[in-house]
Image 1 (cartoon, helix red, strand yellow):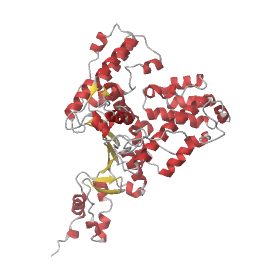
Image 2 (cartoon, rainbow, N blue to C red):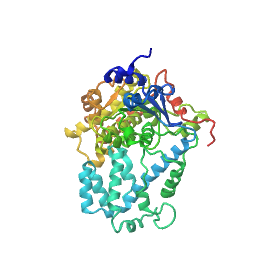
Image 3 (tube, rainbow, N blue to C red):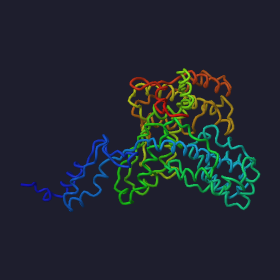
Image 4 (cartoon, one colour):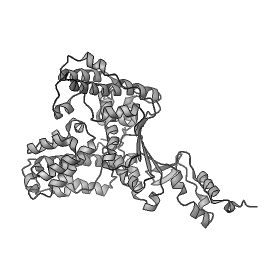
Length: 486
């Protein structure tokens, strides 16, 4: 005799539904097939929901709300060069916008300046300097690690400034004086078209969209043909969510982004693409896990084409990762996560996990002895300014200093260590360094000597993973196609 399941109270039936649909690890999105599977790549079984109309109705949305949705970095042989091309095009677009601003800054009105200063108080000195110098070198805007701010904040500042001045009647006329641009002839000749391009860093464009992009900006370098270019897990998730009806997205509760490999187009800021979905669904939670060794630290090594060419020429020590590069790469992920509320991410909706790739002990050593050390040098120098041991430098000189990394990095590191941050580690991050020893040791040094001593110390430190991970060189070579012609 069949079990009278539908005679059970609805509360018990709901518990059965949740138990039935729950998959250990949740669902995994396959970038190659555009389908959801279990985490071990098996088909999802929802046959119970097809047993009768009542059960189908009662189970609607249960699977989506019960299971986390996992996304990994997106890679296929067909998409890799498309990803690489998009990366180069986006870099060209950013540089082009910076050049437009360099020669269009004379169109910044007093009201524009006031509005920008209100929105970006931390960048007022940069805005003032920009207004003072017509044709201000674009490298002065993009250099020095985005002046210690999250890079996407600086890019948004440039976007907002260009948006304000592009309506000025003299905008295009001012650009005609730029020696490297001809706004009247040839490809890439329309500044308004360039400023209206819809591409965000977390976009996954088609080949046709890349062609349109290329016609607008013109002159982007082609990607190296032997690299395994990937789209970020966040970009893959944004593409998937955009394909769902609003009612379906409203049923989701958790998204896990596994940034297990290096990806294209400033991936550290790609969580911004999920802000609109967290705003429309207040119950949605996004956890972004970034691999330190195969993603963050690998990004700080030499260019892959240089590494591959050296290896093929018999040089095998071409992928050292010096400590200063590791801190800069990691710091960018941290300050971008901190910047998300500025762009509208709801409180509590996002968390970033720093993943040790299965070697927590070695990662703890690197984090405490090298990353924490770099943060201590920045804090020690700031203390020397505060105590008048060193004269207070200008806004520009302070942020150009070799010991300086990012404006909010020391406070962010303190919160990570104290477990009061939305950024956490799957390893022990250690303790913050006592900076008094550094201050005492270098109290008689000039500012330039501080920079020199720090740089010398940093370049002595080479980072290598431990077993079971391969060497940093081998990690780099994992992203090189050895049989692909240049």
